[in-house]
Length: 281
Image (cartoon, rainbow, N blue to C red; front, side):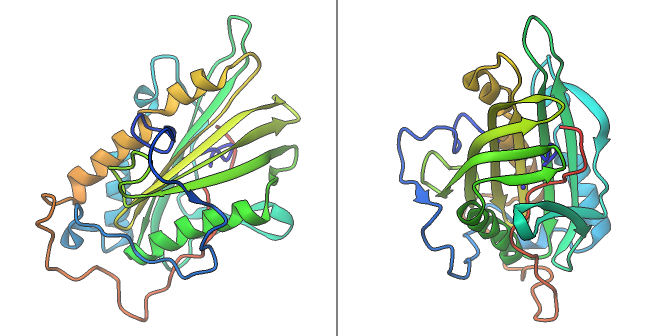
């Protein structure tokens, strides 16, 4: 859900705005089996059924640097290894593993705002994961909330960690979430032996049908939170809109087609994933 990891995002109408709406506290209901959210704006007949179809969808909808703003550029490496994703293991440490059976494809892109004008480097990321089923995507979202309960501090890799983490989730219609089945916002601080800190950190994630979209940002010296959030406030909603364009149907019309990959012998995603931890943003 990251490039620094970093990934996930805020939208002007997303979890970044908490003035109105009812927030679901991260501590509530995380022991329950997640229920797939209504997906009346997605058409199961248009959902990817193979890894190749999922990879093609991701390439169409994932953000490039231009979606974040003119000051944002690619990092090296720019893209993650699409055959692996990150899981939170023992000791609240992230590790890369092979894709589970419930995931068709995933990709993270890494970006930065270079240091300048007396201000430090900013790292950003965008991730899209396509699951086999809507329920698999719901499990990923539930896993993120559970992580926040057990790990207020997480080790990204040696020398890099996140601290003081807290998460809030919004169902459709809550907290200005009108664009996804469910959105999640995680905030905290990012600390790095090489980049310094602690600096403000934000990760946003949202689901639409079987697709999970996320963005993240880790600040730098002299960077204010409002300026950091502004860098990512458009990216996640824009990517979700692109997902709707690819697998959506007119609101309320739906498709009678069964959800692809919903048979009992299909594997499910392991909850508790963020995005790629391989470096970059």
